Length: 451
Image 1 (cartoon, rainbow, N blue to C red):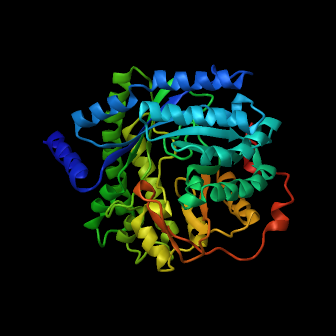
Image 2: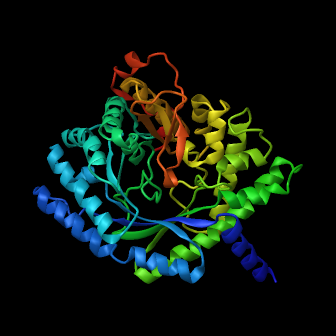
Image 3: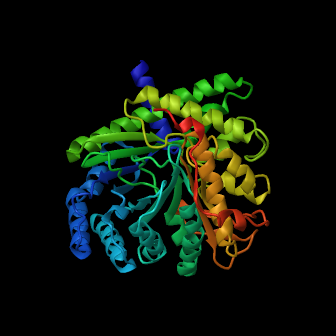
């Protein structure tokens, strides 16, 4: 009877509550592809990706049909391309186009890994890579980029942080004809993880195996529905219900992920249980917080409610799978969550409140439209703030902001699809330039010294 009940509950989650497998992401090591001849190396990158991922989409679709659980995205992550050691924008673009062409050839939605790890310092190659990122984002369609700027162990590379404002502004300008959408494909990280299946920040870490399958499960609608009938329940009862629900969601993801892995003959990596919203009605993280009792996401108490949600999701996921990894918690991307959009438009959810909420959620400031005339140093300062939250709290934080060319606070931008639409949010108007222009390396916090 219990098994029968669980099956019925899972069917209901799929049909009525937007339960899906948000992504099946194949990680591929490219370390054996790099070499001094960058044209030949880029060709090897293309060949390896198309060889290993050639059946990813077909297999994922077959598993989806067999089990009746939709797999929304099929993606690829690769070794950070900065390890290729190129020195010119032209050479970096060879790799960017090889990734983009390979993604199109095998039919995946997105490919990630045009990335660099510079948390402690930049090589000459890293600096040329950073200069090339805006052009790579502008000249590709399916390719995403990320740069890790800090870690709890290393501190924050403020020289690299200073370079992020110009990078993002240049990308916004180069993709201005598409509402500066290129910036939506770039993430600045602190404490980036090596097995994250979610974009735009996915890359295949150097400590990973040759080839793995990582799965990202999502189900904010399922969690919300589980809480609807608990109007007067105390918070510990709510937390327990979220944990139980997360367990069921994770088990469904584990089943599907293992099946894709087995059919492809590729090792299973991790399952990332992150409540990732979509613009669809009823598929909102903000709505979960409102069901808990907040009149609107962003009001006082939002950080506490989000902290409890994130913790309970992690606990439920850990119970359900021996290989929970990635980020696993709750995403709060403004443009991809219809209730967050409403809260921002009503003035309840401000940029500063979002920053406070990032101290307890999965990642950070995600898919936020800001005025197109925002200064480079202000963007770098936003990234520095978010990196500091991650480094001090020993958690992953990230920034994905889009200074929409030609738009001002209060305007609305629409990118469509999973990326949704967003109000352009107002920022603090005072300058951070003198601080950002100091550069240097912010020392690691005292609790980083654990050897």
